[in-house]
Image 1 (cartoon, each protein chain N blue to C red):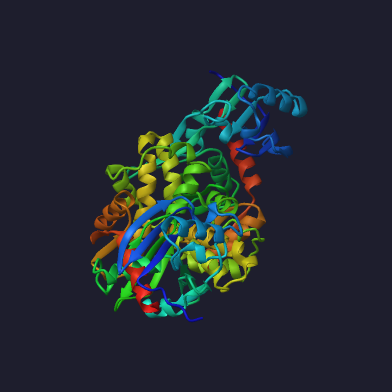
Image 2: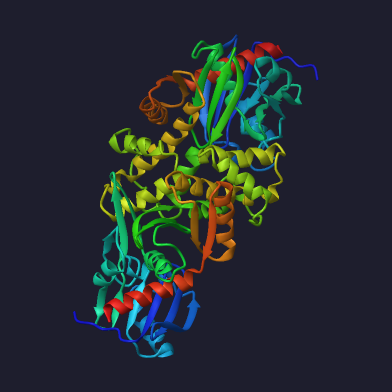
Length: 294
Length: 294
């Protein structure tokens, strides 16, 4: 399919629960809008109408989509490109639904029989380097429900690991033994840091029961339990990843709230943390892919 | 309160979801019966009537209760006795609801600011040694929703650790990203052992996402995902506990199904496993406590 985006196009970072639309004009973001029309909010067969509605609001332009919209719960399943991969491999493998609507592929990695996948994060990761927000050789972290950690080498995604850190926290907060204790706020204070320390034991199932025991024995105020649990989970994630990486700095693509918690945990492990604007990274990445297609 | 049980009494191992009644006569089990009238099946204020119904079926005898019946979701909260502790400390601290009805206390342990608790398992642990089913100095394991690991020293419970292994598996099987993959049977085969190997990484949040990725990338049949996840969780639990113990044998108090899975994981970590009859252990323990009271 011969396609060309031209200097004006729409980019959508279309995730599971949220969506952000960018109007790109001459290599810059002219307008952006976030809403909650993520993939799970769109009925099967409803994506054409969603795309048409976006074009009505932003202009009848070509469109480049990234994220879970390209999964089997999205519009259509785009392939995974095997890492190591850079912009060229992504641009080549864009799945064109029609000559004006393309989905950026995800990335996969398989090593020693163990596999991993991502969708949408690859645009941010490559974009962060392209925009000069992170070095070409670096360890990048994208906290969230499924936290992504990527080793960038020569500006490409060399390999990556996903941890279900955020999902585990959400599950424990909603269901099971600890739910009643974990209603408190998560703040970047002493309880969080105590959890990070406990996470260094790498013994999650036992450390979690310790939260229950601490409540029963009066060893910790239950108001601090959620912050401790968050520190335990984030700390365990950070510790496992840093044990396998020689980089002295972690570049964190996240909002200041969650990004700040990860930064604290990184510092508690003796490395430096730098927050990176993930929206700027996405925009830089999708603009570069657009240039390669145009 | 001056009490005496005499040679005939009723013992109830009264847990969260199940209950087992033992009629003890002259230091032996004369009759036993299991039902699902666990603590959560009994309405607040309903325990007197439950005990009366048991006495109607088994005889109007003194009663010794152990387990979650002595928690704040049970009949009445019995105290925790601090480990190290043996039969003497338990017998002394029995909570008498009336001169014919006592609740055996639980155990607690606090070390380096980290705490743990148990209720009901202490009777089994001490009973296993008293009955000669385990040595006086040994590592004992009680698999389950909240898996207990106890270091026995001189026949007492020296210290112990609880891991939420079974609860995590149940949460993941019912809720969240992996639920759709984890419906398969857990058998003690290759997939389970592959999970045990993965568990040695002590990186649970990442290994769990790996189950998702393996499904998406076709690296493992989803029919094997539940066995792999079970191996991952049990293997992680076993590995963490063995790392802190010099014992070359683990004595496992469990039914052959779950006990067999733990035994496989123990052997995969290069130690020996021996299954112990947990009902015989409970009976021996409660009989010994009865003797100390009588």
